[in-house]
Length: 73
Image: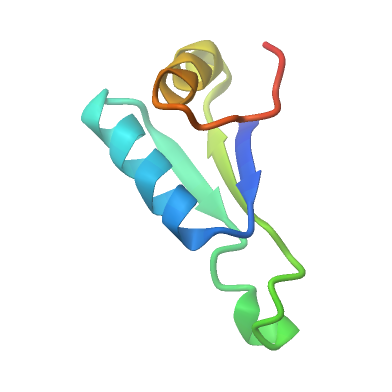
């Protein structure tokens, strides 16, 4: 698995999820419920992971929708 996105913005995760689902790319969101442990401070970013084989495609989809991944694949 490769990390495709890391953010503290829950709306960005929702938008990226919709884009990837729409294109049929499987993904997994990590650390989504960590706010329970951290006290809702937003200190732990949410990560979105994709399979190694889908990383290039997922990165292209997000960039086409103006979501900066910060990754160079």
